[in-house]
Image 1 (spheres, helix red, strand yellow):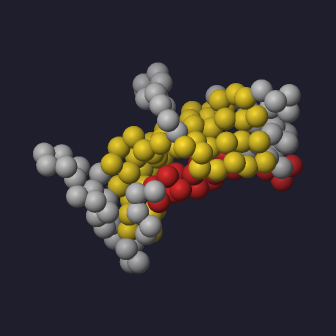
Image 2 (cartoon, rainbow, N blue to C red; image 1 turned 45 degrees about the vertical axis):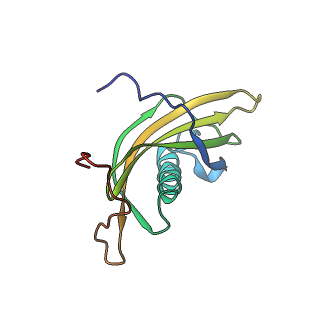
Image 3 (cartoon, helix red, strand yellow; image 1 turned 90 degrees about the vertical axis):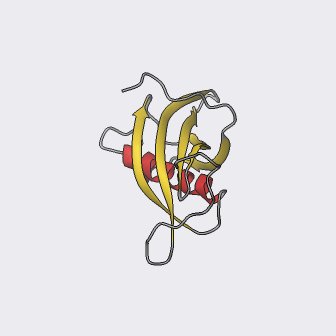
Length: 135
């Protein structure tokens, strides 16, 4: 497994969420599944920038949880497209939490692939790849 994700030069804010008590696990921190659900939503928002049609998550290639998130913290999900295919996009999501003292910390990073689909769920092209690009 690579040590780090590719650098994030200019991620765009996709989602900002206040973490609530209902989002906690048995240890009192925010449940990882809650963060994953928001990552999926943020990835969709990034994919939608490439076309206003249906997008489905095809895979979550990697998620690195780096630090816990606490109740009352504001969590930001910033995205950038790192690969464009003919009918898919690969999105990097970086997740930062604003601690209750106002400081920010990177808590999670993820990479996922989303596919453009028609009403029946079959993949559809949303762009023509550049000449010589096999994608």
